[in-house]
Amino acid sequence: MNNTASDEHMQMLQQANTRLIVATLEAQQLAEQLKAAQVQLVSAKCSAEKSNLAKSEFISSMSHELRTPLNAILGFAQLIESGTPPLTPTQNANIAQILRAGWYLLNLVNKILDLSVIESGKLPVSREPVLLIDVIRECLAMVESKAQEHHIQVSLIPFDNTWSVMADSTRVRQVLINLLTNAIKYNREHGAVEISCTASSTERLRVSVKDTGLGLSAEKLTHLFEPFNRLGQETGAEEGTGIGLAVSKQLVELMGGAIGVQSTVGVGSEFWIELGWEHGHEHS
Image (tube, rainbow, N blue to C red):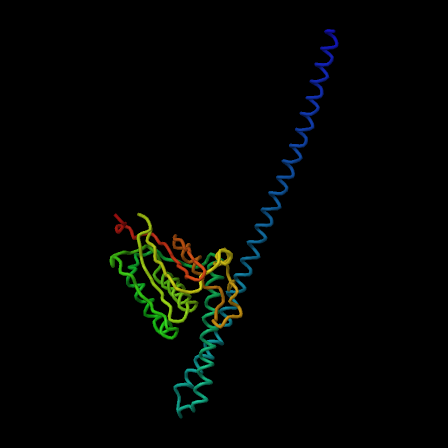
């Protein structure tokens, strides 16, 4: 009886040992497969990075190539417009069309160039104290005529005029003008745009641009900051490329900030950017 129990015990040990060996071999195979997958992932990542860099460099090169003839076209059109003898009304209208299309195309090329330079990691962004009230007023002045053209009432909610952020003033202007232009362009007739500035935390200030447009669905919001995604506006009356918000997002993040949006269909949207307080002017 003891021998039988001993034999059974030995058999169980052997079976357990066999299972352990099989499990060890399977674990080794899994580890090898994981290692191979990691090697493939690193290789694929390197390949994607090279491809993305090549794409960015190509776009950058093409954008520069396109700007040269475009500047010539615009320059000659402006010379004709202001030359003598004076143009006929028909000629004036034709020149106006050339200039309008030319400026739009140049703006598009510049946006693509911005995006490609940002993606290649070669865009220089400075960090300096930027007085928000000055930047916001400049941006409002630049979009004033567009607001009047679309019958949009633009208002600035009063805030502390001493508030400053650490950022690149040129890039802050670029982002705010894009947000204001979109708020005007995609608003309803006789709508309103409201710009405000609040202390979102002890580290950051938030600038918000609120509109009374059609608003965006949850599905559209998930794709909002993707390059070249016009969110179904491709056949709309308003010109646009879907590049502006993608560039704005990357610029804000390069300055150490954040960008976001809240939107309600049928009510409107509120886009905001957050940037760090200037040192020595933190919110108390």
